[in-house]
Length: 351
Length: 118
Image 1 (spheres, rainbow over the protein chains, first blue to last red):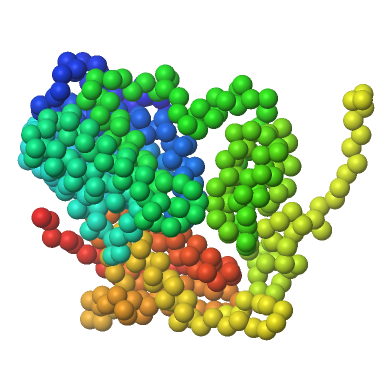
Image 2 (image 1 turned 90 degrees about the horizontal axis):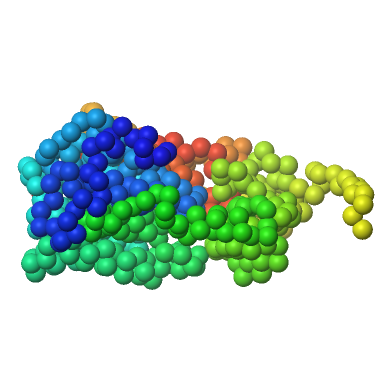
């Protein structure tokens, strides 16, 4: 998963070779560099994006899906050197189509497809071309769904593209267009909880929108000649993981509690007594927990654990929970109490 | 379908589940419409939004709910991935609303819509 392992990296322009001045034109090499930087920057923040994922299904994979999609899109280039921005964008959008993963990945593939369509026939891009391509990206993204849900990455790309367009028409150069797009994307992202109630309840912004903001940030960093260094930068969750090294607690524990009438605040208070780096988000039926602690079992006992699934009530499970079956205790530690045995463990020499 | 309660029974009709499911499907990215389950003369009939529940078949046998969805997908999107997203989303939405597990969600892609390029 390192950058160096990518065969296509050879074609990547060195970030920092830009003269630091505002760019007036983007050529194929510049576009490739910006896309690579966007990919790497998102990759760095992948876990943080995952942690935000509560919509449409709270399965915590948005960051991973977007990251895999943009990676597949750029891998499509392979060893080819495409001197033409239009050709590059077309191949990238083809790669995104074939490599789209998950809901956010599918939307991202449409955004890249629209972008590719927007730069069609252009060897290099001016600020106006870039803004036009972003608008095309937003329009294409909206075409792919019957009932667009606002407060998602659709809203973020649309508002960012509108800002880019206004800036470009106003005579901004490429870097400034990107700056305006990013600024608006951030504002738009901050508004997502107002548009989509499930985000507000969970106390998060939209995960896909956040992923998009990271992609734009990465591209802008490249345009500014800043290096996106995977090793050098620390991010939210990575930061949390790094904290684990300094933390007095040993285990990074993450799980989902499912049930009815769950109280996020009560759970957060309870979990907070067990360790640090506590992150508890969710609603009455699904709560996501992240904690660093010494006794993961203790934290897990608070609820039941679903591995690779958020839905743990099935007909096969011993505690029932389907129709009138079972004890009505599913989703809690009491549900499995009858199926486990307590064991007396004597630790010598402790006192 | 009868989720249990100590006071009595709650019955949920397949039609209600179909409405729930079709609403979830239409919010799924990549789906541009529901289609009738039967293909007439080789042409899938795209349903109006208010009739979209007709693109859903709900079966309840032995307490197992299975949902069949007949959809039209936008051209140029990875169909397998959209279908998978539809399954996840419908399963999640219906289980959440119903409080009962959904055994199967089957997605039938009845057609692909090609949007005019601008």
